[in-house]
Length: 486
Ligand code: HEM
Ligand SMILES: Cc1cc2nc3c(=O)[nH]c(=O)nc-3n(C[C@H](O)[C@H](O)[C@H](O)COP(=O)(O)O)c2cc1C
Image (cartoon, rainbow, N blue to C red; front, side, top):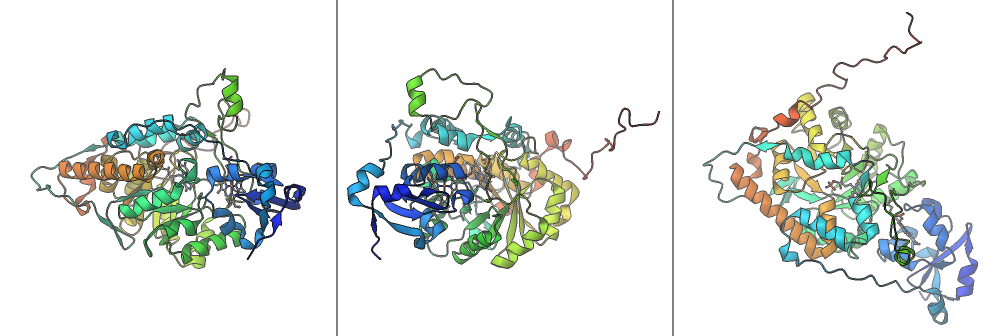
């Protein structure tokens, strides 16, 4: 179909809430009614109606997202050649910051250091940020360091096998990428690079609802029938949620990971959240106004319908019915909810606090796994267990597996590694695999089947493990002064 050529003046006349056009990469789209639904908030859309939004769009979204979301019928035409220069803004070229040779990176913390230097400020703040004071974020990592191994010697662990079987599929390593939104902010290849690296390392990628690229574009870079998981943010508009779920199923998702730990947007703060910055370089400030978050800034609070804050246990059955796929709850933070997930027929639980991006001072993920052992061990072995948050070493992976996790997931480190593109993510996989193999051999096991809780000493955490669903001694209601009869 040949699209009609449209002049700049005609485009700019469609700049009203009930009659809104936008230009993305030369194509004119009718986006009437879309602003309120935009998961990134209405303002950016409202600011670009009747104009060219390509530069903003391309920073964060892949080329096919708009078409896959709105449908080709919303294309009204293409920008008239004569008007291209006046309407289409060239993307500003970013300075390239030199990075150390990839081969010189030997652990994941070095990727983080490089990312802090090399990523645009906006991307760095987005990826590294956590909720409020970052207590849970820091404790996620810290608690793995409080667990010690109990190595066993002379077990013949010269050759180790890191493979495992998860949900019926063989995986070459027991760690996957955690689902993360808007990956293109970190690198133009975004989720495409994460998916390709997952394929190269023999694991399923976890693809998010809020991806930069359309789901079909990501699936296209994988060999046919390569398994993947789909992470769902349940849209308040159930017909939209249904469309998303059916698309994921039809494209071959193995299971749906329903995110349940973020019913409302948390107060995200920058990593340097405690430092108030005084920006003295006015020129830089003006040039980078878009990029530099205000001192002490936190991210926007979406006021739209992309995430249903009232999601309930009964909705889980609906998701299973719509897709016919196994459902795993992502964001389990207590043994009580782990048990409830099991009773509601979930195939798995995904212990997570969103990498410290949901409720700050929620328990570090590994503590929740110990709580499950302490209070509902009967579900272990009957339900698959995924876990993420603060896993930075092959030895952390091994500790989680010794304690009963089937697989672990890695969030930020893969995004930091992505500052080198796909090669960086491949290198991060290789580092973790090598560290895991070494830790297994030194612990005295040659396959992950041999991992068990007896191989770790958790004494430094045991006193913190909750053993019920009540406070051990505080009572409620506490008599109020003035309210009690003396
Ligand atoms: C039509 C299909 C579109 C879809 C499905 C879509 C989806 C999304 C999603 C999922 C996010 C991430 C939200 C988050 O991580 O919190 C986002 C953010 C964003 N989108 Fe879109 N978007 C679309 C169109 C556009 C257009 C046309 C523009 C440009 C004018 C745009 C500009 C942005 C920007 C700048 C953000 C970042 C907002 C922020 O961080 O404050 N999007 N969008
Ligand atoms: C930049 C970023 C974006 C994220 N986006 C999502 C998302 O869209 N859906 C989701 O369920 N979790 C999301 N998460 C949480 C991750 O899936 C994961 O739980 C967390 O990153 C694990 O902690 P780690 O970063 O310490 O490994 C995001 C995390 C980060 C860092």
